[in-house]
Image (tube, rainbow, N blue to C red; front, side, top):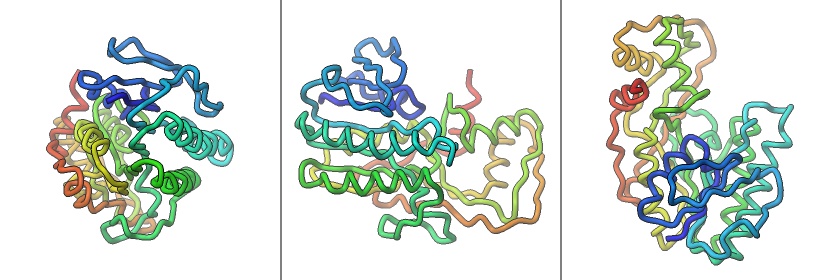
Length: 284
């Protein structure tokens, strides 16, 4: 297949391009191009700007839109960038996919569109976005859904994807604290999550591109843990007892997804345990 991947220089994108390259013709769009894999066609572009379609393939079989604003935590200061990439950029890519004759458009969203709740989240639950970033992703989901008259649209709602090389997110931040002996502060009962390793995530895309219908799917792992348990798994991997401080605070609720549709529709079971996944982040 001929596939355009946006956000190809990001954490998931880098792993996905490497996974797809041996069997597909991959066009990788990123703010900064890379030299590897050698078979990949790299395209330098910032999605805050209109697409330069002359630099894109005139036809593609599928578009995988992973790109998101790098300023996703900076609201309201960089609300313009968040909206430009997550909403306007998505619209431009949908229009490109239409003109390029794509049969499938895969969009990376976030489990944050549901908001934190106590019960396990399913795809039919109403949206209640956690913040401006999640709101922008939900707006983009609504745009994507309108194009299912023109091609198959697959929306992945990611829940705490993690793995080697990741920086600045919940799991690598906690792991760094455990490794350095810093205190991990947990407010109230702490958040409950079911993370998924990036090695399992990249296996989802080829079956998604082969679907002959549109889908909305939670993407998460099988192991549900609270923050105290998650930090303990990290301590076991590091070989150092974590330092945990529990303080009073509001109950954070859960961001735990029901992943049964992901497994049933795509035929993919997560195969990396949390213990092995955390250990993989310690490898040189």
